[in-house]
Image (tube, rainbow, N blue to C red; front, side, top):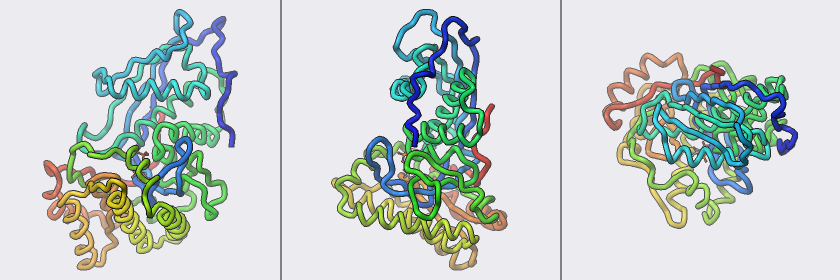
Length: 363
Ligand code: PMV
C-alpha cells in the first residue's frame, strides 16, 4: 500500500489560497473484536471489528491561512469547548508534525482548530477515536481543497482512515458507516493493517440498527491509558494465543454479521470484553480497571437475558464502563429495564443511549 508521503503537496506562494475553513463531525466506535497490542507504527497485532456510533461524536473545525513569512514550525492554536487546552494542543501539534511527510503544506499555513464533543466532559467516554478521525478528515478535506487530489470518495475515505490510524489506532474504523474492520484477515479480501475497510455492505439489516447503551459506571480518568495497555501486551505471556483467538473470532463474527446470527455475535462480544480485561489482569505488572458496578452490570445483563430470552449482550472498552448491545426491535422493553435496573449503577445516573449509524458528516 502507498505510504501517502507526497513531497509535491506544497502550496504555490505566487497564487496562495484564500483563508478558509473545513469542518467535520465524526463519531466514536465500539469494538466487538478488540484491537489490543500493536507493532511498528500503529499497526495492529490482530484484526478488529467495530460498530460506528451516532450519539457520541466530535465536532471539529479547522481554520487556515497562508503564513505571512515562511517558517517550518507547525503554527497551531487549539480550542476545546471554546477554551485553549494545553494538553490537547501539545498532542495535536506533535501529530501534525508527524504527518508533514503526508501533508507538507501544513508547514505553510497557520491553523486554528476548534473542537467539542457531544458527550459531557469527564464522563469517561473515550474521545480519541472520534477526535482523531475528525482531524484526519479535516486534513484530507484541506488537501483536496488545495490540490483537488482526492475527488473519489473511496480514495478520500481510505486516506482519512490511514491518517486517523496514525493518531489513534481505533480511530481508523470511525471513518465508515455502521461497521468497519481494521487489520488483515483472509475472511475479507481488501482488508488491511494500514487502514480500515467498510463493512456496511456485509451487514445483515438487523445489525444496521443495533442499539448501544453506554453505561458510565465511573467517569474517573483511567489509571492505565490504552497506550500503556498496548505496550504491556509485549510482555504478556498470553499474547500470541490472544492474537490467534482474535483472528479466529473475526472470521466467525464476519459470518455472523452477514447471516444475522445475533446469538453468535453476542457471544463473541462478551467473550472479547472479558478477554480484554483478563489480558490486563495478566500483564506485567497486572492491573484491574473493572469496578464493582461493572461486574454488577454484566451479571444483570446475563440474568435479564436468561429471564426474558431477549438478545441483550455487553461489551467493555478499556475501562469500567459497560456497553449494552441489542437489536432496535427490542428497544422499548430493554430501555425501560436499563432505566430501572442499570441506571442506578451509573455514576450520577449517567448513560448515553447510542446506536450504530451513518458515520462522519462534513459540516
Ligand atoms: O485506539 P486506541 O489506541 O485508543 O486503542 C483502543 C483499544 C480498545 O478500545 C480497547 C479496543 C478497540 O479495538 O477499540
